[in-house]
Length: 130
Image (cartoon, rainbow, N blue to C red):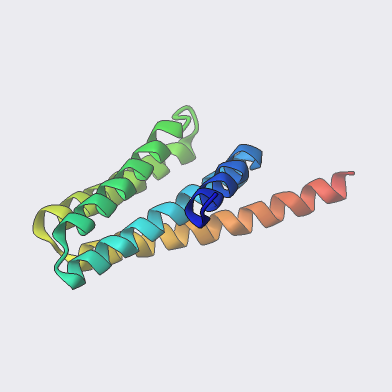
């Protein structure tokens, strides 16, 4: 088995054994990574790389939208935020505009960091409850 296959096996195992909270964190990290790749593609003049990475980030943001439970008011706020991030990604792709990618990335970094804090709080509360 070569290194790429080993990495894929490891990644699949990581996904299959992750908690729902960890999966969301992986998605945030993936979207951020793809936006970084899209920025890099633009900087290198590799528009195909920029486009492909941007589309992958858009797909992750769409998954976040699909996962929202709209019966909760907070979900409606997240919907607006994810919709805005997706809009920025689409505009960045159309206009080949790095600044819009950077804005989307900053928003996702903030959401990811908030998610990490929420995971820590939940873990602490579960430990106290035992």
